[in-house]
Length: 56
Image 1 (cartoon, helix red, strand yellow):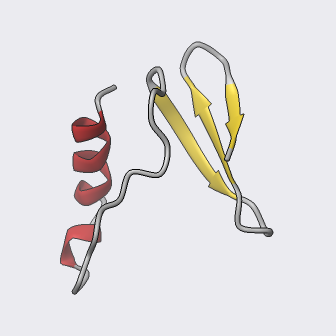
Image 2: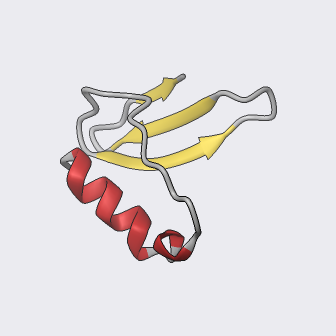
């Protein structure tokens, strides 16, 4: 999935209505990002469709 498609999907969830929305790439080179979860310490888990889970 391209970064543009991922961003478009997030915006489609209603985030586009937020005032002062700013997009910033924090992770690159993902192969078909599938899911995202935020950790209590501020990190992120990102799963990719091929089965990898990445910690950022």
